[in-house]
Length: 238
Length: 297
Image (tube, rainbow over all chains, first blue to last red; front, side, top):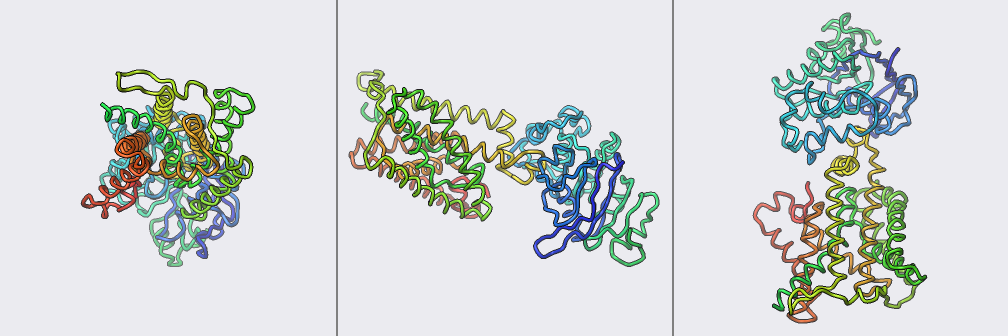
């Protein structure tokens, strides 16, 4: 059964119709990679699912219950957590405080500070540093760790590799693979199609606010994704 | 020795100003609201304690009743007025709290008239301890200073160690992301408003004990609080104490030089500190006035 379901969702930025009639469903334990060009509506879609952005139409179901009208913090308590684009750590809090502040929401689960330091060993020795002084890769790992502290049922990650050095990206994706191995359900927005296909079990490609290609990663060829990415018409809309 | 005495008295007076400034600083630090009605809310606290005391309750009981009432006033203000005006941008709360200040002043005038009042606390008003032959400290100023220290310490502990305090700091830095990690930002704001207005009321109650007040006493209090916050840099709790003490000492030393210079000396110290910060090289590149008052851009 799907843990997250989006039905016919629209979202706007003022007059800009950023997300148009998107429907998708994510099964428990699945890793869905959401790819697409800049401005395709991926970030808006994730933010709308997380509750940071209002949906103008459609429904969002988590574990079968409608969460469309819930504010973001209540969706977190249900189990939807977003790692926002650009990390958005609390700059004046220490790394560990960033984790702790997310860990008080009360959703039961087995993620805690100690377990995080095992999954992301690079973070343990930085725990007392102010978040603003961390490197990009360290910040991204902290942001993912902070989201895990809420014990999400589905984890949405927006542009995990954006602006990071290739070495840092490797580290982040190693950690993500470890998170996937725990059975976590992931929705991953990524510009780097190769990276995305590497970890994902499913792929959805967005173009101008719509999902134009969707399927299991094994059945979707790289060429199909590239065609859908640029809207070359070879791909048939899902 | 007379100067040492004036400095001691000034430091104790500074505790009162710090108490007055704490809520103003907290509200700006957490919600980016400059509450121009802060001084008037303090006067509301003063009137409430005076009124309860006048009904025959002891000063202590009056204080214990006043604090939660003022906290509730903060919650209602936040929900009904500030939260809405904040949605219209940072300038709107400035206008609404300015209007609120006028409304409070006139309501108090309507109800209590133009009389100047004070809460009678018996001999505590003039009792003191002898430190040396030339230096006596009043019990009430020491009490107020102690309460200010305790309050700032408690707030510091709350913000740095307790989960809700941590959530408050996170929300102050980035409310949208705070929601994304499960924090109810609106709830945190309500809590901050409750603390801020209750501490204003506490400062007002001490004003009512140590001096006199009337319906229009708020704006003067606001200016002192504001100067203390700016000297101490916005958002820094212990800075607020330093700011309050700076103004207190300036006032008592000014008064020693010439009784008419007391208030003026406090304002001059504030202006001097601001001017000094604005002439430090590179300050304009780091945000100019914002950097000088302690706002991170």
